[in-house]
Image 1: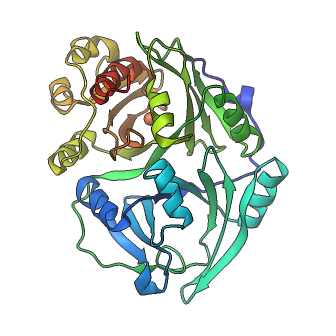
Image 2 (image 1 turned 30 degrees about the vertical axis):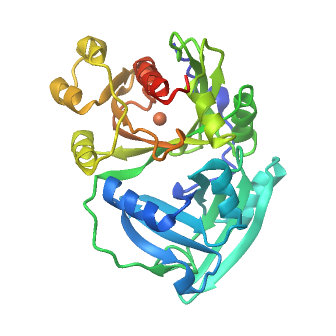
Length: 373
Ligand code: FE2
């Protein structure tokens, strides 16, 4: 069973108050097309833009929103731009995880003192809507954390962006970012768990060993770190020794280094969300039919109909606090790297460890099809 540490074991002073995830920025090969992919497949509205028409000659970005989730998709307009190099090396992926904070300068001072590498010192951006303060530090691989104070900024995403009027898309009911998972190299999980603890003041919520998460062929280890309010959760995975290549190694090979493996988003009605996404053409991991044979015995009484869950391929897990429903998409691009998780929580604060094994068998089937197992 996973070892769950109590708050008293890991309590650290919250020297870094974070008001949640402000946005995720993806670096992509073609932001115009990616924006429409996330709009049409996942139900995001395109609400903002910057690019040639707004005077930016180097890059173009689209702002996508659904519920409390905000994605920025950025592409390079020139071949030697940092975004172009990032995409050539990693493919499309999450570049920045942005926190909303009240004081960017105090946040940076606090994390710098505790060992963070500051990439962009606190900077003010201004336009007719007000002032926006931002700074960044390094995370695993080429990924960064961004600190954003938008208290003094009115409408729109940020200075440099214009509001975009596009027809409202059909929402899929995605409400908020639940957790963001990183894959790091063998032996690096401990380093990053420590970094999150010492530098960001996060605490360890759970630790899964390869005994918890393994199949006949592959294994992984995971530590779940969360901030002081418990609202921001970052599991960190590393591969473990297995007979064949684990899905984490496959990711590291194709992303060419550590990065964000998946972004989990909450919904209040996972059945409706999955129906919408399926009808939009979103591809999910296949769940073996055998998974549902013992499910009722394993999770007990739940509000949902088991036959509907089976029809939609939705997974269920239960722990001492309640249960959760979850589903995983196939990778969002040709490289088998980033994917999404859709999750509906009924009390459980876990991550579906009871599903990992069934899921990995399914992922290994996909790896076999890709010839990368
Ligand atoms: Fe997850």
